[in-house]
Image (cartoon, rainbow, N blue to C red; front, side, top):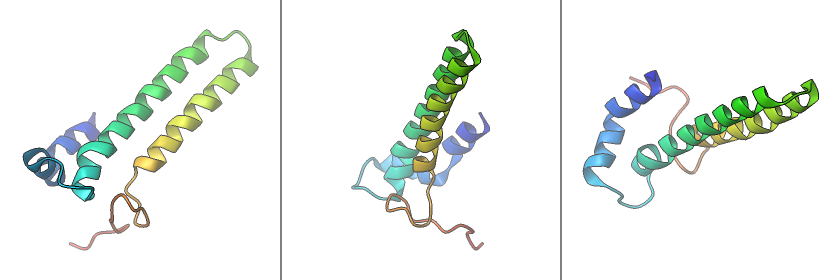
Length: 96
C-alpha cells in the first residue's frame, strides 16, 4: 500500500497522466509498465500462495510455491528501473 501511495504522488507519474504517451521514455515506463508489472507480480504470487495451501503433500506445495514465486520474482526484477535497463535510465543513487 505504501508503494501505491508513493506511486500516485510521484511527479513522473503525474507528468505521464497529464501528457499521455509520447513515445517510449521514462515517463511511459513509470506511468504504465512499472505499475502493471508490479501488480501482475502481486497477483501471481497471491494465486500461487492460494494454490499452495490446497495441495496435499509437502512436495506438491513446495513445487507449486517455487513455480509461482519464481515467476513473480522475475516479473519484479523486470519492473525495477535498473541503471543498465533500456526501459528507464536511473542511477543507483541519485544526487540531490
